[in-house]
Image (tube, rainbow, N blue to C red; front, side, top):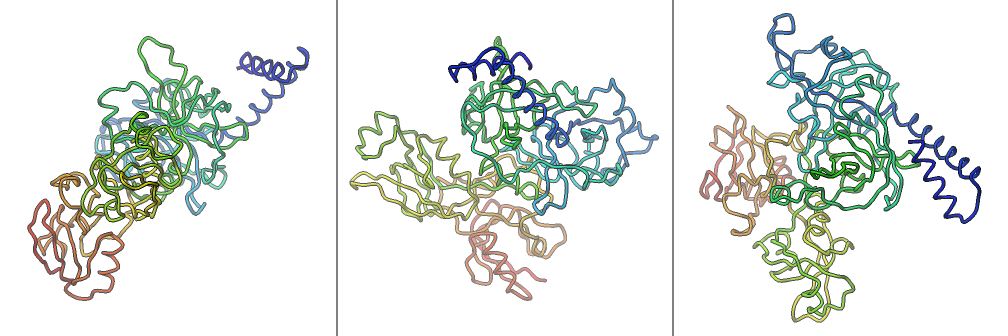
Length: 508
């Protein structure tokens, strides 16, 4: 690191077009001292994470129960030569109200770990955290989102007799603008070396923004993760296996990103990697996860396609941008359709952000939650100038339903019934939303056994269009309607995965 810092100082001196070797050394020493102080301030908020699969017979020959609580992990986890099954890093953050200390990390680091309130996964796995002060404690997942690759852990500070008020979290509520060329410091747990609580440090430069990691395989291009939309920071710095989930810090000591993956191309040096930027989208995601909620993403209800630069030039829109995206198909009654967008319209901007590609369109729409009202600038053949429509977004269909962890539902169960937006779950969309009208209804995603809803023979996959004759299209609509209803309630259903059009009565 000293060599690289010295080189940077020399470059700075050359850029100033003056100075001597003494001045260069002074600059290098000053920069080095700045980074050392920065690391000292940030390191206490970095934890090492290990996922360990225990032998069920190792704990006094007692069977492991998912809610069984241990004050600390087994002693072999503390052994200096212990090698965890899976490992990574995490960041101590405060809860939305500032009262709790939680850990932000990558979903792929803790995938398969126990979900709150359980302390064991069904396969006997546990999650352990090692703090910078070498204290060890258990953790459980309170929320996780495969699409963004982010997760929140709740440490068992009480069981480990750790006072969380003595722990200083990193601020994630705000972030500085990230620019290409900025220098950053990266802390993590490469190769599980941070078993002693001391995070390893690297540093590098923000090489670019809105990047998509290699390799560009058919699988990665077709995946439902945000990676394929090009939302990552590219960092030219050493990021080894196990760095995932660690903080990316700017020279002011501010959290600007969370490391997530390496740039892995066979046969080439792996000295660069990627990080999730701490921007508006990721902060919204973290806020949802900290609350224990499922993360929801906006949707227009169109099938977009690229407009090449030549094709865009021939449209003669008069707009000074290189390209755009086209709505090749608009679902009937979808949010886009109801706002006035039609097939073959060109999408130029969303919320004042230029749309140069399909990835731009999907990434920008995903910034917003369902029911957000956003301005969309459209150009249409036969109309001389672009025009703006306001779209109230729907919900992007969840594809990895099993991977989502949400321990605190956004809406309470009503008489044993759990509901979502009509496009909330792709597995219940018997027909593609593009091949059938967008349903003005809410989707039943769960029915509790022996509940009033199950007695009414409601099933997951049903679509509820009315509550006592009142139309409902969103979870908020539904819960407002049932809150006013007393006694038996009549629900009118659309055709769905398991039912024809009918009405059912749900009793108290």
